[in-house]
Image 1 (cartoon, one colour):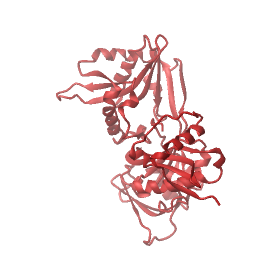
Image 2 (cartoon, helix red, strand yellow):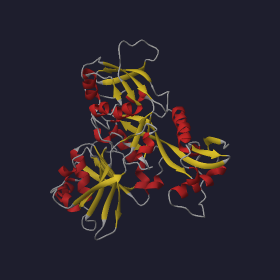
Image 3 (cartoon, rainbow, N blue to C red):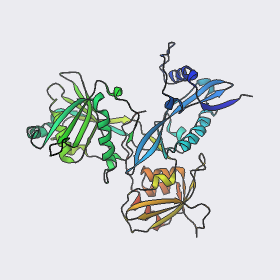
Image 4 (cartoon, rainbow, N blue to C red):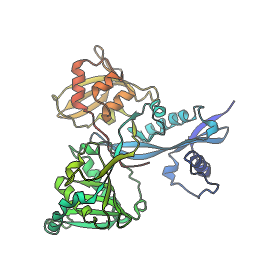
Length: 412
């Protein structure tokens, strides 16, 4: 009988870890580049061992994600791989059992991954979100914004810096915007607090700063980008952020300055944003395609992920009691009370306390789809992910949790 063990890997096992990943992801090489992961990362790399041989692995990345305006400590699952002779034997399921326990230990309230097979990860309670769009257009579609450049130096100015020198400043600006009320386009946005500046070599960052009385003029817009080719080149915008429409147009005017040698622009856009309104003529040639496969997400802590969420008030003091079922992570499930206090939700676990009458029950897919807004409430009910909710309760949930697309640029 095969002896299976699931645990964190040791430093001496890194090469075996690399070989499994190299084979599974089609980048096999007889020569393995020497790599020593940092201790914190090594502590999040898990593997299955069959009679002492490593057969499958994954890494539980430590990220942060905005969920309905609140930053949550997030698990980003990556590097899931199994040797072919050990597939279909439950090794990945054992990996996820161990990883879910690790998430609980680390206090990660949500989890996300890019699936190789969506139905496979659905078995673990993950719910599919939406694709991120990649937009490519003619730079001339932004030329109507060029007169704004003439105003630079009066009320605002551009500051262009190599990305390796200013990446943290950009991240901090995006972090602040994402938690501002009403910035729904950042829903689902993820960041890696440990990302290093060298990851952005050969890239530039431009800041739009307001000129004022302070020694350090505030940033109102920023973009990280790189230039590819010349003559028929492309300005590739990796990420862009702005305070308001005025700041956005000043940023796009800077992009338009590149049109002579870079007649094309490529960027990512949130599904919730009407990019046609940016353009002088939206009939000009452009192409929209799927940039990333849809992220899959999962709630790992019901109380923490719901607490502090700002909602459209339907009457302060409104309360909703419900239960959650989670077959993979029993500690996630239970009975809960959700109360609106001045447009902000407060959640608490009420297991062991009396509840009167039948209360709605959600599967882990149901609470995840509700929190992330991947489906309208009535669609979640239709799928059986919410049961026993009456019309009044359904209307309450629709007011608090409208469907909302996710926008995430972090690839892992």
